Length: 239
Image 1: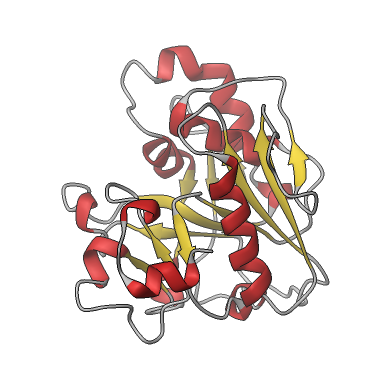
Image 2 (image 1 turned 135 degrees about the horizontal axis):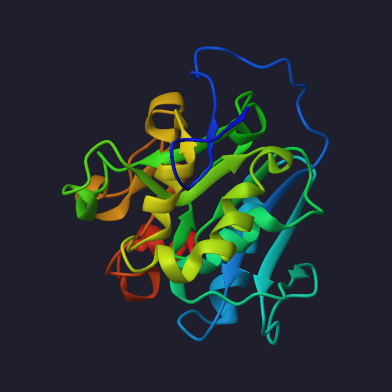
């Protein structure tokens, strides 16, 4: 349901995760990442693709939104955009894509896939995002969103990208991050940490004593990044 608040932005409200929507398991899931600019190399994209390939046992399509596809594995579909946004704001362009399957998964590039991803296919809600409470670098933003991982229904959330493009210049004078914009636009999102406890974890917050036994996705929202790490489990899974 799209509703207008007293001012911008428009908001997308979704129900509680306790209310399941009557959606069948998808035949194909889209996994999407973004490589825009020079911060991350094609190697990061390829390693993420291989991690998904090893750990998602069902049919999927893997795409990378990028202005420079050089070095990407041929199995990776390239997505482009006529609009360029800097840094983490480029994530918004994923939600403006029109050719995505009914269940899609956005994943940051600075992520290591460490275990089975089948649980993502069983999601019956509309929009799930990581919460900030379990992320070490996010303790000043309690009960917020972290978009290192987003599971969503593309047909319902185009506004998240389309409206941002329209208001970007004015918005970024007062809003510092795409995560904050997502909090403004998507109300009552499902929180990944609550619906799949222990499956998606923060490197600094959860991996001080090694890889947690149930973890399937480890995010690295600040430093260190995967290429900086000497832990054996990172070397094993980030290949």
